[in-house]
Length: 420
Image (cartoon, rainbow, N blue to C red; front, side, top):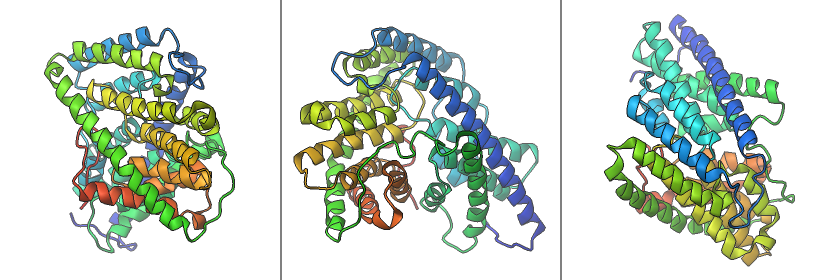
């Protein structure tokens, strides 16, 4: 792909204007999606702070089974499917036709308490919108890719509470290593700023589900904390291996039912509903429960925290393989918070903020290869000043480097598996 960065070019300014417009429209769509998701979850699950085993709401089994049935019908009679947002960013296109039914499946999945995040559906909406506008306007391939990137940037900057996170994500995607790419980044950055501004104007500092969700003690960097970051990044590696093994095993178990989507999703809803009743922390994104496991870690205990982490991995793998649509990042953030709480219970002399920040990002970074962007997300969650956040980035980079060096890649419906 030929990428230009000529501020004197009329074509470049046209791309910039269209990119900002697509970013704005995508942010509006993402905001509506997240609002509906949050509102629906608050009605169905008004209290997600219960953590005791077998204390899930009594109706969750019936609800998730019925949602599984409806999701199966969508898969049977529509083109709904999970689509790769990272691939759309890399290629500059996404087929818009399957997106509407896919969004309906996703909103049912998320509102119904399945362990998935909104990053995939909001990204699909944004990428498809960019492709659709480009096709309607008969734009060339380069302009189409800019629109797709700008759309995803506008949607994600609000979802993840920072345009900076989006720019890091784009730098970690496949692109030409040349100064010309900064022309695309400039447009994407402006689109991200527009999207963030929309979320900020509507919600103030509560722009997403991530911003300062953990109230942790103040933390300031010490030299030896860098080595702690390396150690914590290493701990995330076996967790990623467990996730990949469970996910692949789940795929093998479920694959015979792929030709029978109604039966597949209904059974999945029933099983995941039983898991949700048994381990209520497996319900939903996990952002609400992150604060619970952090504040009540001593009361919960190491064994139950391990159960919570494993149950979340099983719930995520099940949702992905039984036909529900959503992303892996948010549930993996919760898994990281459980492991961080465990480590702090074992080594109380380690700063809580440091441990939680490192583990929250290291676990998803070992699975989803955007370690720098995830490091920035970790800063947003724990509220660490950027100057003190070096160990958090190191933990994410160590976890990412080792898992990918070992070839531990999960290629089943979790999004991007590598960069070039």
